[in-house]
Image (cartoon, each protein chain N blue to C red):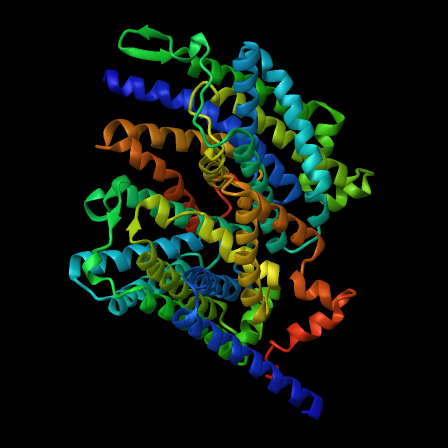
Length: 291
Length: 329
């Protein structure tokens, strides 16, 4: 019984983090119809940003968070202007390959700059815990959940209550109609791509005190985000939440109950991707749209 | 056929045959470093032709490292557990790749574009996790060493790799002249319209993916004999996925000669980076990434396409000699 409550608490905390991780990817796809294969690299860059600010200047990751979110936004905007904008009308193949190229570039810039060494930011709350009965809660995970909630709340607020957020949603729902209403779609693409990057960088700040930081962390993070987004349906925020909960609960359950479960848990994302693509390619909450 | 067409066809054949003879001959004569380069080009030709075949049908694979790794494991396990010889070990490797390719084609029958790409990526990464989690079979993180008593000598390995590359290109050439080629190209443009015209996309997809998977697994199987060691990260290294797409894109996607020219260029680029930047980690991958971005944005038809339109038209004509003449369907 105590194990069960531990599993539930861990799963809920992880769901929050996973939602934050994937919501940007989902938003970016919903608007631009391009999968950002460099999503994991923005997480990685955010994590390195938090790590260096913490190590060199003793800035707590939570304090550097706003700075890094802004930084992620501008890097994302720059990447969009330099590269992504040029393939908006190109075939899928070119878009996929371009994003894959950007993934390689960002990853290996990190390798060249900071080597492949494993690092980790260690503020006090990274390992300290609360105990309720038999359930342990690591402060770092709780903080991650809180940050995720605030960020996602901010995103939903932006999408629903501001002019630019509504315009982004309009382009996502019906591009042609949005253009007729005087919305510049390319500007909205840039905005959503940059927002995607900012959210990824925020995820990076949070994971900087939860997992090890290496230049190669981005790829496995990308795959998790892809699994969540595909589960929920590409381009749907509610779907992302559902997908995150499913992935978090199944990973945690397998890790606790199956022998050698933490290793198998790494494979759940891939099994879910294949399963959902075979059974229901548009995901649980996705609208029936062809890519 | 006009006399000019005829002449260019002859020159084209001559260049192809000379390239093939060179590829197979160098392992016998060249210095160790040259032989090494030819081996790497041969293997790259195999996987990039394989990738290009799928791309030609509109199927973007991000999972070639999965086929590769599977072939590697099939080869090493058949040698270590069943006592297969070098040549024989390539059979299960190739068959495994064909089976997985065919299965993937059936499973992903409805998927297109980005969804298909993601499913191949998930497949490759899923294999890696499985390889880590069944250490009884694969040795897990500790890895496996190839039974060295079965080693046939470097010469055989190099020659078989070169022959494999020649065979791969021949198969692709034969396909490019067949009805298959036109059906696949039509699938790339519009699968629904294809179906209206009486082409069953699933059937063609099944065939091309089985073939493509078999080729990539063959390359993985033979590379084990070069390295002699395998662990999940080596077997399913993403670099093979990257390489298999860099080469066709560099040389010219959807063409027959593109993957071959691109493979030579990719290996040459790797060598140049290694010589100029030493063993700086990440430098060559960074270069590949930058190239990928530049080519996709600036030269979507690869080097050949760029030359054909630009000032280097003479070089393009030279490269075009490597294109086989296309007969009408």
